[in-house]
Length: 152
Image 1 (cartoon, one colour):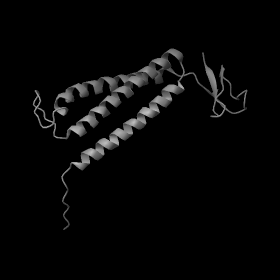
Image 2 (cartoon, one colour):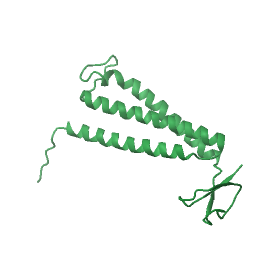
Image 3 (cartoon, helix red, strand yellow):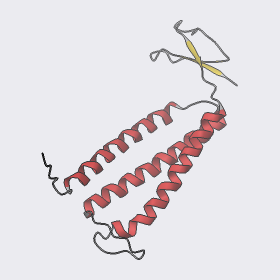
Image 4 (cartoon, helix red, strand yellow):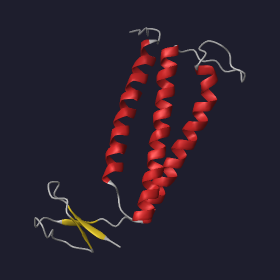
């Protein structure tokens, strides 16, 4: 079952079937019926993110929670405890982003349409990820030794 939605943000009327002109405002309409390929791609990306971040998270937690102490596998985290918490929060946020992608993909497969709620949640999570990544990069750069530049 396909639907058409008005492209005008102030109208956003949705009608059944393929319609090119909005019956409410006269603006252009777009088809809303989603292809399953997009939903499957979202599902695969979400699964990859969620599984990958879960593995990374649980592999790094022992060493990151004890900075400077050698873990059982021989690894050692040299950053600060604050940096470790920030990076682990970033990993958890990417994991949640993957879970939202999985839920969005399942929703799109079942309903053949995209949810505005998922779009807003995804954009909000993307903003949170950007802020956390910026903070993580800034925090890591603060602890770098000063660089010496030579001019010849």
